[in-house]
Image (cartoon, rainbow, N blue to C red; front, side):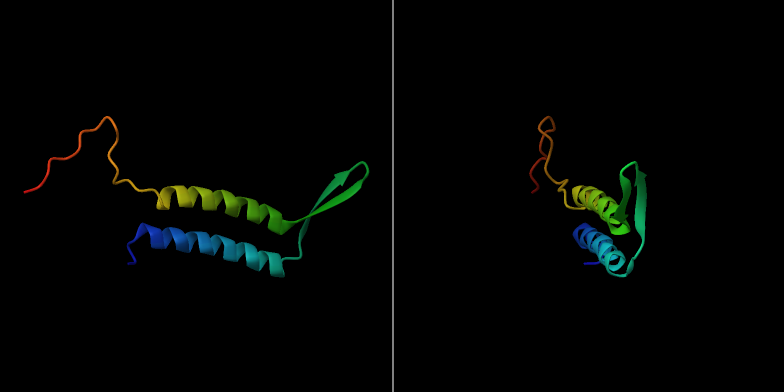
Length: 81
């Protein structure tokens, strides 16, 4: 079970979003962008959530793909027996 790519992929995605949750709850920092009409405050959790989203998509693409299906140009293996 601990060698399963599905298990570790799921664990990595959960860890990313738990980090977003923790920063969202405890983080009080804001990015302040100065504009001519005033200051714009963006919570820091938005940046972390953006990278967690990108990381989740990449992790899911790698961990949950099935490589057992043969390619179309490749001949299937001979039957055993």
